[in-house]
Length: 188
Image (cartoon, rainbow, N blue to C red; front, top):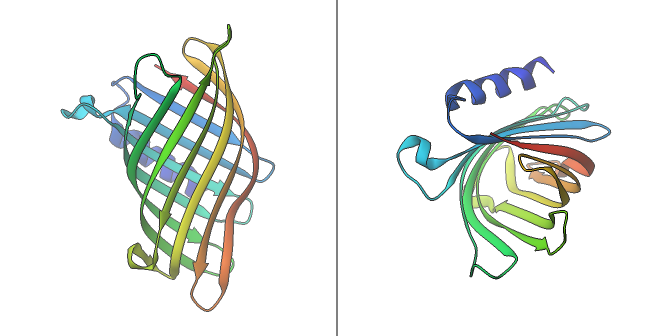
């Protein structure tokens, strides 16, 4: 837990919380994830989101991520949002004692359900082949699906499923995360 809090504190400290952004926090039965995201306009280049995150599970696995994602809408009357990006991961697997670094490419898609209460279904997928997976890893995949409800104009609650896995050298596929979660997103 101390390692997770240190990673989260470092990521928040480097972002300068004085800029408008989003804080996303989820819990599952055995893990937690915290992410801070800010518009790249805060660092002088608009049009994207810079994301810093930290993950910890009760197996002692620890993960930090840093990425840039650009999102948009095809047309103003379509309820679809999509995005593309690059994400870097630093992962420490406790048992077996392995470290994996990955530079992933991926994207996201979100369908906004037309309703009085704003709701959406969305998914993200970021993956790295062997050529961009380093350390003790041979590949890396991070996939998430969420159903969200806007509770307040600046707060969203969600339930979802996340699967994060890597193929470790001389070990096989290792699941870092493979479970349902509940979370909140706070915009400020």
